[in-house]
Structures are given as structure tokens and as C-alpha cells.
Image (cartoon, rainbow over all chains, first blue to last red; front, side, top):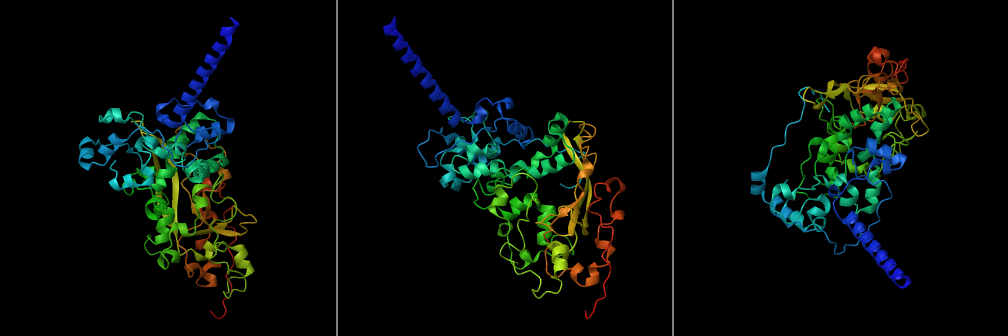
Length: 113
Length: 360
């Protein structure tokens, strides 16, 4: 049994490491709109206050120290954007697909500002 | 949103659209492609801009333009409790639209003005002074600066030199700002310490630049070229379709000298110019009773620095254009009874007496 014990520990350790690396990669590269927002309760008190009164009510506002990112351009694994470019540089296509935003100004609004 | 193809050659386009905006690659279906889309990428500045501009984003994240600390500071001074959900709802519904993220200044018109790319998604290093700065600071800054109010001249800084906002206002002011309001601490920009008017001091050859006037009056008291915009009242709420709205009374051009409410070593003057702001006791009444219980802690006629600056102005045309001229001072009768308590410290009770003008 003991001879298998260290093997199990190594496998479990490697598995944990791989999971952590996948999670770190996912958190740093994927758009946060696509990942669950951290809850306000995770924030410190002062950051929770900022969260409450923040202009955009951003649920994904970072509450810890900023990520330190190496500004040197590298071959980052960003997904291709060909589909975005193809459409958003094509005026005729955009006009065809455009939807008029719903008017949201209240009739009770008045004055400047 | 039409993107100029020239933008695709820009370094900001290199990571690709999805890197900043999210969305779904490899599909031509509009609905599918927009899944996970963040329309305004700089809503999350650390992800969109901060991957390269690390320091700036760190600064901006808590900056004045992004967090609009001025609103929070003043509302708190008026008794707002930001742990009260009613107050938070009112604030988030009506006040936060006016904040600015990176993209509001460097890529599009401010979202508060319904956005719109300035130049096909070009990332402008220096924001457009008139589209961007003037987009938000229009009626109470830009119109005064450019002389848009009929009969009131433009600032000499614009008329003679065409100076953009960035000539006086520093990067630090745009990106940082910290807590408080823009009048917290020393004047910034300072007329006399920004490398332009540092020679203004007693004995500089201008008769009125004596100790009494220079220590007693903020520069604008003598050098604002005329009336500037004041706004009155503001009522907020939601209509029967649940659409938020605010309603203000008609604005007016006013010129009022008052007591300095922010007197300090850095702002030592007895008199400053005052402007009425669109605030009222019942500002948030729709959301709950008495949400600003200490409303009277802050004047409604507030310290201001109009931008229509000129050397020669109606009030400095002669001594008695100011001395004894009750019209240009904020007196009790200028203030509605409901607001007198709030403005007690800025109302002028004794108008400087007329003087004998010799040899003028």
C-alpha cells in the first residue's frame, strides 16, 4: 500500500496544479462578461462601499490589488475577431442589421442637464 | 457601430475586438456573436485598457471623473446615507450617468450624451476638448469660455490664444482627483502658479492689485467678464412607465459675489463668485422621505470659477462698479426663504461701501 501511496499523492498534486493553472488562465483571459461576477460580500468594507455607489454598479469591479500585467506585447491567446471586423467595417451590412434603440426619455423630463 | 478600417492598423486593434469587448468568435450570426459582449469595454478598464496602461488605469479607477466623488462628497455632507438602499437607488438611477471611463474621453463621445464613436474607434491620445470636455462641461464651462451667451464676451484665453482645456488643466486632474470635490485643496489650476500670471502681486503696476484686493478677492471676482449659468431645483423620479426622469426649473445667467465658503490658507479670499446649483431639499423625495436630512449643511449658491475670464470687466471698470453695487452681491433677498439657512455663510450682509474715486 505504501508504495502506491506516494503515486496517489503525486497524481492528486499534479491534478490540483493543472486545475489551478486552467482557472488562472481562464480568469485572466476570458471576458468577465462571460464569467460569474464576484459577490460584494467578498470585498473589503471600503471597497464594498465603492461598489454600492460606483457609477456603473459593476459587479465585476476588482476589489483587490490590480493585476500586474507585463506590458510587453506577447503572443496572447486572444480569440480571433474576424467575424466582428467583417461586420463592423461593412456599413451596408450594419445598416441592414441595425435596430433602432428604444427611446427611453421620459415625457416628464424637463430643463437642462 | 461602424469601425473605420484604418483603426485595424492601430496598435489598439492588435489584440482583436474580443480581447476588450468580449463576444463570441467564429460565428456570423449577430445574436450569437454578441453573446458575452461588453459594449463599452472601458466599463472594465483593467481588462480593456489596463493590460497595457497599468499605472493610468490604477489611477483612473478611483479618479474623480470615474467615481464622481464630488457628488458623493456633497450628498454625504447633506446627510445622504449610502448604506440606505433608497438613497443608493436614487443615486444610481440619477447621478452616476455623468461619470466618465477611459472610452468616454479617448474613443467616443461620453456615454452620458448617448456615446457615438468620435472617429471610427480611433483612440485619441488627447481627448477632444470640445466634443469630450465640452460634451459634459458645456453650459457651465464651455459656453462661458467661448462666449456663447449673447452679450457676454468669451474668455481672453480662448479669444486671443485659442487655448484648449489641456493648457491649464493637467493630466493629473483628468486621471486622478481622489476624494472630495475639485475645490478640495489648493486651486488647480492656479492662475498665479501655473507659469502664466505668477507676476500678479502687490506692486505689479496694477493699482487694484494691492494686498487688500489680492487677499480679499478670488481672481474671478474682478475678472469674470459677466454673468454665467445658474440652475435651480431638481426633482427626480420615475414616470408611470417606470422611466427615470429629472426636471429642473429654467436656468438663468447670474453674477453674484458672496462670502467664501471654502476659506482656507490655500483659498484665503473673503469674497468669491457663487453659482446656484440644481439641488433642492426634495431632490430624492420620490425615493424616500428626508433622504438628505442635513441639506442645509452645504449652500445652494456654491463656490464657482466661471471661465469667461478677461482683464477688463464691468465690475472692475471703476471702484464703484463694485463698491456699493448691491446688484452684484448675493444678499438675503436673492435667496429664497427655504434656502436661506443653507446659504447663511455665503450671503453678504454688508455691501462694501462706495469709495471716493479720485482722478478716474
